[in-house]
Length: 187
Image 1 (cartoon, rainbow, N blue to C red):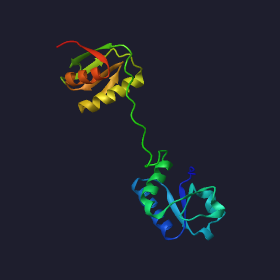
Image 2 (cartoon, one colour):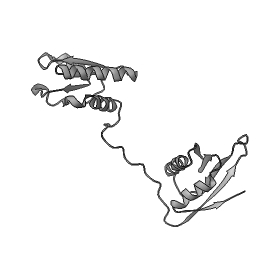
Image 3 (tube, rainbow, N blue to C red):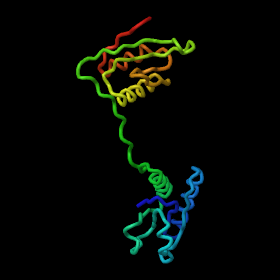
Image 4 (cartoon, rainbow, N blue to C red):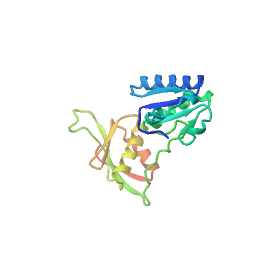
């Protein structure tokens, strides 16, 4: 229903005006160059339809049945936010996002190495973990989980996960829960 245009046509009376006002307010607050036009069903003309990225009606409109969405009045704010999310390429707010995927645990116990490094970091220590049997995407997912569990930042470089600070004990516990054996290197 939503095209690439920058104008949404709201068809109806008071509810359509309220929805158009809410749409304009959200678009302005987000800095989006979109507009909303309100027409009564009897006043909808072909040129306006061609310009519209979408048509929202608050009652059935027989001649527009294939290209409209019907909204109910009590849900205008939610529907406007869902509409803008779809125009931005997202999903409806009422749809649950997919659950985060956990990295695959290895079939056999795999040993990873872990150490604390400060060299080349002006005295700021990081916990480094390497020798994972994972591809780059799975490694980044695992790094995101570890960063969240430690409450700090980090990155993935050259097949190694670097977590800011000394979190060796916490990271070891988390990795063991994923089925890895952790071997510490250094002090």
